[in-house]
Image (cartoon, rainbow, N blue to C red; front, top):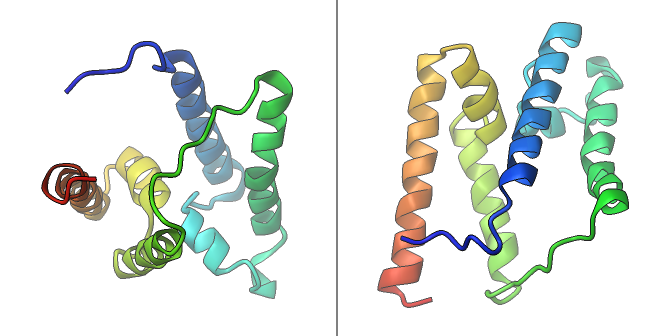
Length: 142
């Protein structure tokens, strides 16, 4: 495996990770809530849950436009045909439901709280991701 050092974005990746950690920390410290995106979006229309969910989602949707004020968007390359993306989205949603949370809930917030369940969930979804990339790139030939 080689790293494409020309396109390697160390500082942007570090800043993004720090911002995710800061947002997750602020949400739990100020609101007592876990920053699991699937749970936040899944209960978005629940009136009893409060407006904080809408503020969080609007912040997620606006953040790329704020980034664009600082730097241009990187060029995106879509290598698969369009029907694959909705199917992939549905599979991610199904996995989030089956795993009782998503990568942000388990991988960021759960691991930081030393949750054993989140450790197992993170190992499962990371292992599945590794296996999927291997199969698609090396066995199917994509």
